[in-house]
Image (cartoon, rainbow, N blue to C red; front, side, top):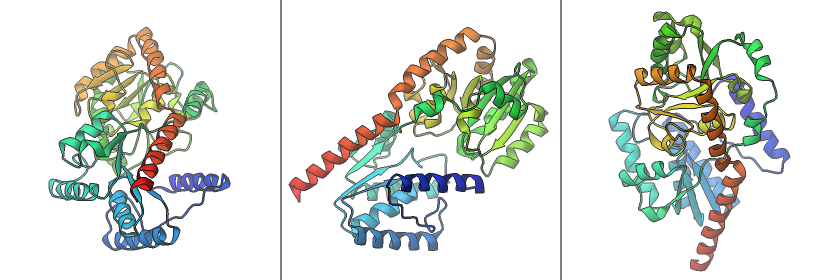
Length: 351
């Protein structure tokens, strides 16, 4: 996590505290696998659960979920809930490490009362890998602050000026961590094909990650350096996304693709990989196009179609907005509240 992103997270935590939420942080609990820190985090979590005596522990993501659920189980927390936010069954690690995670997920599912998947497809993936029986799953979409993305603070024309982008330039944008599983190299390859026929096209990458240098060098080596902007991580995501004419998500694996809902809330037509939970958000030909993963030719062809058809873009944008309405943060909170209440009631009857 970069300094700017860390500062934004810190500000979000402070805002939560100002609203009465008590925050406990564990510096040892990081995204990467670091055995010594992971062990420390596990025992700290168990100590917190024993002293705080929560009725429900709800973990998120695979590694933190495995550590947190076992710490909660050993601390005798009554109800344990987990949200994977996608899965690590392929695309993230090598075959050996993936098999270890699959085994740990199956084992940990035995002590989990509910596994919340973000989409029906994500649930199907978990069932296909025999992580848990069907009865253990609940589907609750990840909520989006729709107002934030439908009403930006800065006018798109002003933001284009700030970014040095002409009003006449056709902007293809994407948002996400610059990591292999997000498939950004295929978008770079697609960009090279598009620029040959549509030179007034700019590709904007919003996000940071370990592939930043590699992708920038790739764009330079294939001669499209001037047609690509890498903006890094920024806190004003909605304002930047407002400058996009279309949104592309070339992921190789995706639980839901929350950023797609954000783009749809802004009326952006979508081009996205036909993988994971994306298929529950993008209806090909209606609010965008689904393309095979790792297929730069297909991405390029769909970009050129939307470049040449403003009416189609507008119609897809309107359809996307209507779909995004189903994924509000309020809707997610209500569904979570009902699930928590149900699980708490079940536990109180069986305790």
